[in-house]
Image (cartoon, protein in one colour):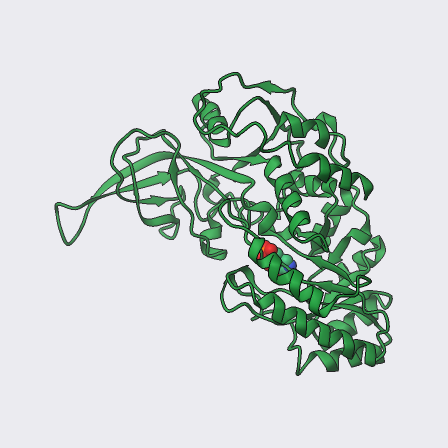
Length: 448
Ligand SMILES: Cc1ncc(COP(=O)(O)O)c(C=O)c1O
């Protein structure tokens, strides 16, 4: 992971504005040649608000692995989320900004001994396990840990299935592990699962919650008298045009059926839900090549080379099975034609879009890619000397005035307000969009 250490100044936008207009303004300055992201803090706040509205009982613990951009993590900390950390470095990042250790779950069922010792030293007590050897390790290095058993319950399909690697079988393995933990004198306080990242089935949460309920009873019967945490993992959609409405209805009703007792604390570990839509990538065409089809000499195809590729942000195409969509920043009116989009490195594998259609692009034209905040930046490398894109954070002025008061954010991170005069900007954001729900969210945050 790459923790961005330098201070990221947040541009405050006063007046109607849009991400697309801001990107246009940046590239029209003429000095921008490298790819960059615009990160909208308002999107993160809006998503937090939506989550609380739809699943008031479920506390989000943001999965840091999804995008460890310090500003994103700080914004979520300011809103009051907890954090799912998978390693010592992730715990260090989250605690370094002042998050209390009881707002962290060490949710990696296969931890290194030194990472367990570190968690113990800084007071991160809650951690997951799914095997006998992990129990033995925890008994040796942190016998006072508060354990959460991770069970397997897979969605019928998911962008990135996880059950193949983590989660014990809830019927054949979990009861024995719960008993073993009791024999070891370890304290199991809950059950967790992850249905798969980018899950396309919602009913799986109901199945997993029912299985968890059964294991709460088993746990209680074998001596874990304080079973009190249900962790429903991640898997929630994050794209601009997705919604958690349907999945939240399934979860709320399963919780009502199986965990009506409010003394059970319900947490989740959303990653892409918070990260994806807040980040829009801009990349420039720096080379192109016309090729003719082998089969038909009349058919031409344009290969566009852009300054970010699968070794950078578009690693998500390989590792996260992401389908990315390229949009020309400016509409030049030409008819979309067959083309492919390639990254800047010398590797033939570095292909962003093998077959798509785009209007004719010239060298120096820019493409934008929306919903690029999940599983992109933390994995990107500067292979071949091509830099990982920088992030330009931005926020609406009405939100900025509230956010800058919330620790760990501070007024010094916000650049002096930019007044956007022109109401003629085509895709500008409606004036009410960011501000209206925020007061309620922030009042709630202030109470935490
Ligand atoms: C343990 C754990 N929790 C949470 C997440 C985040 O999942 P998502 O981005 O699907 O919400 C992951 C992703 O791999 C994970 O492994």
